[in-house]
Image (cartoon, rainbow, N blue to C red; front, side, top):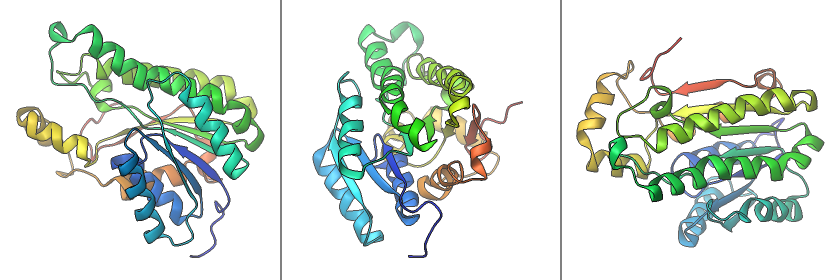
Length: 256
């Protein structure tokens, strides 16, 4: 593997065993970035680690079983990452319970709590736990939001507001942490994943409407489209952007 200017950096990717998280992990491993992957399914984590090591034989991969709804998980994941790799340069908050397909009046208290605990609150907890180490490395935070929130997609009464809260938190952190040279950005991805495939099967009518509005007429790929942007945002060139939201959706939700 050719030497990259990012070789030796370390990233935590929550929800890194599949879908968007695994796509980002592949892009990072190819750059020589060591990755800590979290997830709730140990078998899926083992499979992801094996896939990364097959793709990049000298990949450095730490897998940690962690549930985003566990309040103690972020501090433990950060501590285990520092113990293994000695530093932290990038935090990617990707893990999220996916509860959609209900009108607002049918969203339950449990739906709201599970969505916000696994999304917004976990994102905040990971950011706070990572901050001392990101300060040392002048690192980066990349949080995953969604066009479901930006564009108020029907059926996203819990998921959409949660993702918008993540965007709001990210903008404030970007301003507060800029003097530490820490960048905080958001990606709103629309790429193929196991979750999106399940959603497509359960709610084809919603997907059909969304597909009509995708300017490029196709769904993106996690590694190619999201992973490559996550690589750029931590390079010297990308480190002048902070507090921004990037729509990686083929033009599905073009906005001002």
